[in-house]
Length: 295
Image (cartoon, rainbow, N blue to C red; front, side, top):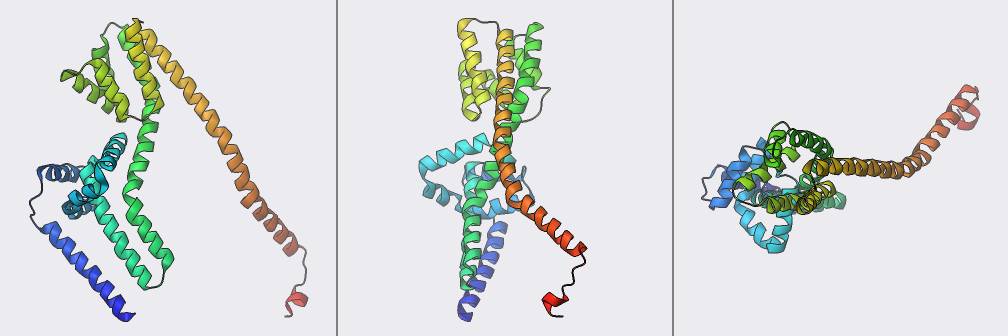
């Protein structure tokens, strides 16, 4: 047992020094991986940059193991998350390699100590830690877009009704906003500047965002363009529908929250309150516990 423990510690020390050596080494990387590393180092913290540099050597192997379909699926998820911290599919593969190696070494060391629960936790860390940031970023970004979109459309309708064209109005209003939705509009405008048709640019906008409100906006805009409806009326109608949808979703969330709150109250708060009241009444009654405890 002591020999195995010493072996595990030796492997850990060797892995640490190997990681430091690889971090400092000037290794020739493929152009796409080098670009991902350069972009990521300007948009992430010191820890993330270190992890990327250590794991970028293993990124091609991780991508090959993932396969084309899974790589495409994760690339779309990273797009839905808005590339948080400059995250790319190559940097994701690098982090997955590093966290997976840390999780495997930690699980091996925990098994040597006989701690199966810690081993499972380390394995879970290695498998899922790369996903946590993406899941959180997708949810936060989607909420921010859906919260911004109705007000954005109201302002856009006012600007269009003042006489500006739709393209110029989009540019003017997007320049006054910050956040993921303004970034998406700027990307769409740049695509249109590069020769992409307005319909295709907005189709790409819908593809990049897994949001019902964005899909509603793009669909209504395209239908209004096909039917020749006034753009101002279309924008105002979309904003009203989105606010109505938001109100319905809020009512659904409130309806789902009531049973959960009731369950928590009946499971934890009511028994705890009864115990507290009973203990207070018992202590306040002046009962002599010496006969019970034998002291």
